Structure formats: structure tokens, C-alpha cells
Length: 105
Image (cartoon, rainbow, N blue to C red; front, side, top):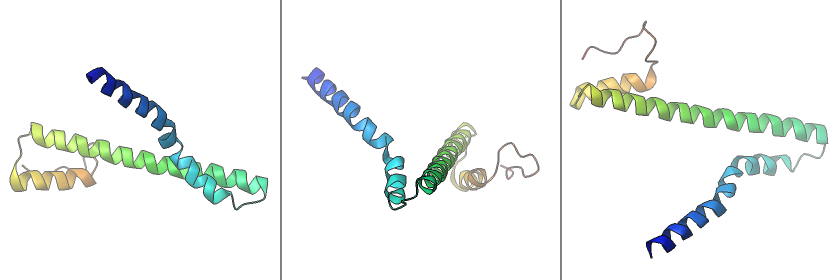
């Protein structure tokens, strides 16, 4: 029974993966469908896809930064207000920027 559930889950993931991969292109394509000139259409698609990729990259970068800050706070064994102050600073600032150090712990 476990194997049947695992196999069906895997099959569902394989079938659904391409749908999620084309999510960004579908939004751009829907907007670009209204453009009749092929040159303008190509230019719009290029800029739209570039913009979508930049947004995704920025979100992933922020997520990675938050994980890094949380791990640092855990390793430093911070709790309560000290942890909150550290995380607030860490989420907004660059860890490697020595001109703006973290608050004293």
C-alpha cells in the first residue's frame, strides 16, 4: 500500500511539474497576446520574462538571507528582545558590510 501511494504521488508530481514551470510564461503570454506587431511582441516578451526572473531571484535571495539570519541567531543562542533586534537588523542589512555592524549583543 505504501508503494502505491508513493508511486501515485510521484506520478502526480511528474505530471504537475511542467504546469508550474510555465506559470511565468503564461502571464507574459496573456499580456503579449494583445500585441499584434511581431517586433513589439518579441520585445515585450523579452522584457516581461526578464522582469519576472529578476523578481523571482530577489525573492529567493531574501529567503536565503532570512534563513541565514535565523541560523545565526540560533547559533548565537539569542532569545527574546536580543533575538528580535538581531533579526530585524540582519533581515534589512548586509552581513558583510562592516560599516554598519549588528547591534551589540
